[in-house]
Length: 470
Image 1 (spheres, rainbow, N blue to C red):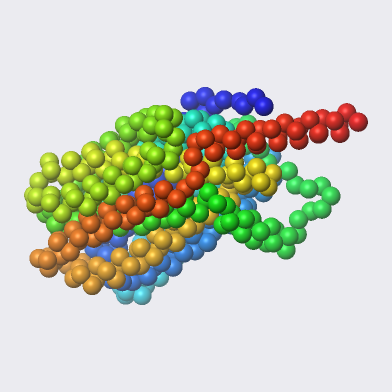
Image 2 (cartoon, rainbow, N blue to C red; image 1 turned 90 degrees about the horizontal axis):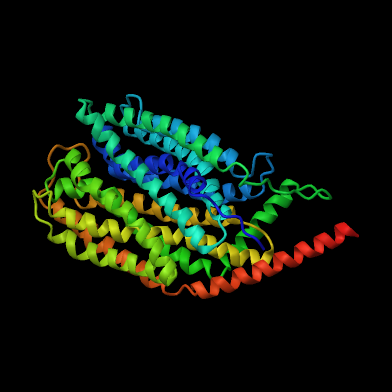
């Protein structure tokens, strides 16, 4: 079977939507807690509860969106329309999330955050699940998929830069904490409209509508039953579960790391927010970006499993050792952690690429292409752990003595944050790498799966040609 190759412009155009998606995620992960607790004045425990409610809905909606996009029969594709519309709506959602009206009571602040984040997450699902599913679908060979998800990570890093730097830029222009967040989210809205349209245009002809049965239209009950059967089969996939579990644990580590980053640098190392973004987080993103070709090469040379294991394991060891010993008041020493962390964190692209390989095994067994369903469950599980992590973090901050909106904090708070930010987070990365060793989908096994899948498709094609001729 001849496989049509993708040009770099097509892969880059497809992946460009990740700039806006990741910019929103970065704004939420890095600034949302500090914004609502320090600027809006919401209690940390109520912030955590709001996150739990909103993100749990977001998690549930992911496999539903994946199932819907698998079975969408629009003429311009089953994924692309959601990318286009979802980009506009996601920008609208994040703008209102970071532009709350004046709210006096804790309950009004809590309810506004729940509703705003609920809609933001819903719109995130609308664009993110079809987008990542399309990435697994337009590439066929392992090398091509590594490149596609390498491009996604490259543009994700640009989105990370946007989400990090925009608030700092507005602050440098004299805007206060509230105005800088509002203007940053408005800028991201404009960015999302542009990149979602770009992704839509560059994937023209690469996304095909779902072919519905002409003999028996699906009823609502049939769709629900089909969704449940699909979910049951996915959760029984021998290659998917260990990969999913490892990524869930790594996501828990990343949630704690990204949410506590500014607090750690501010309360433990006594550094300024704007300088942390420019002198530490920006270099981290730079090192992460330049590591992408390295991980693509290592995956091509040694397969995806070994590099993914060592990336997560070394990231965990580095986190455990370095963060507790970084000196206060220094912007130079954290650059060592930014360099090593950025290089090791680049291995994350291999996890998403492996999901696309797992879908090949599913297609071999079932004859169906269900990238949307798999990536939907992939995102659902990680968002559930993220929701639990946010809720846990809110109560944990109160337990270790963090005071919402206070100008000065307990002198012991910095060390308590260090224990969580360093050894606890690092141990989770190490645990994720150990779970990952249970994955049996090696490059040799996947090559055999693709060979059998290719034979199966050729046989079906010959049978179809024979029936047509008869």
